[in-house]
Length: 191
Image 1 (cartoon, helix red, strand yellow):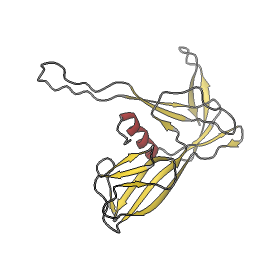
Image 2 (cartoon, rainbow, N blue to C red):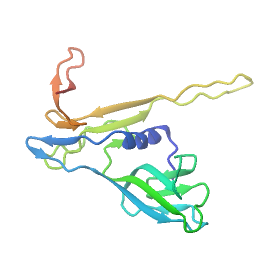
Image 3 (cartoon, rainbow, N blue to C red):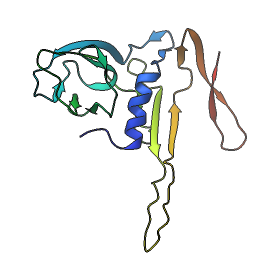
Image 4 (cartoon, rainbow, N blue to C red):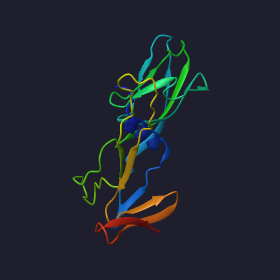
């Protein structure tokens, strides 16, 4: 199944653009959930679907075919469930295909925030980013000749647990509790 839903496209985009924070809690450093790698394949002039070796596929950083950069969703689509890249046109015979991608355990998801995840000190599932589409595009109904256009809105939430330390771009942060006086508890990043 190709990535087509807006929240799925945003999740894949965020995985390519946001480095995973280095996480620690009470002197326990967690392993990175994602690994970035480049893989070289060879076209045969007829194959359009290529499966990456390392799974599960989380995002595609870049693809070149014969040294020419390819545009995501124009030149190729992604099927994260099958760990595949689907080209619109098959790469030529003996042409080198270089796929740079991330694989492993995702930390950005096209779903609602979840409170049922592990807070175990060795397998902590946080931080986690959730993306949910909160409206649908409008469409014309009835005898209207007018074109309606409405953008798609997506809600992005980051959830973590109190006390988890994060390092983003060499800056250390810790999740701290803050009473906002309205809903009870909010959390913020503190250097």
